[in-house]
Length: 128
Image 1: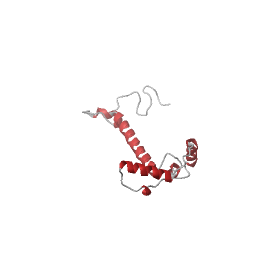
Image 2: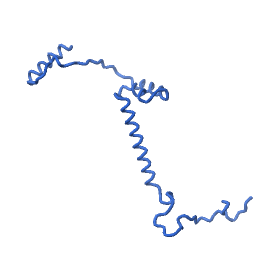
Image 3: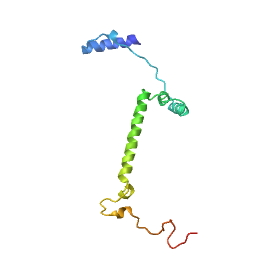
Image 4: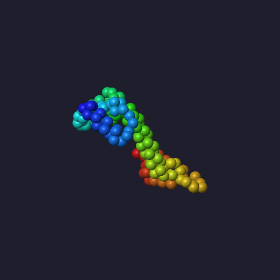
């Protein structure tokens, strides 16, 4: 098969006036075997907690560099955490943060609800 490929490339090189030696070409023949992705996922799930993440990811045919994938996953998790923190922070009201903006007196820090007494019992009822 290599001989036929070299003859083909020799013709292509000559036709296009390309420099280079056909003998410098190397061919890497790999047999294409379909992957059972479900089986790969089962293996990875079984290995969870028993081996490192890069080792688990090395069993997945779609991942060429497991360590790079682990790094990307950590970056994504950090980004997601930061995004979540920003969303939560933006929705907190001033009261939830501990005060009301633009208050000129101490009314923001004082409760105005007097439905309970100092012991936490509803007003108008005795402690039993």
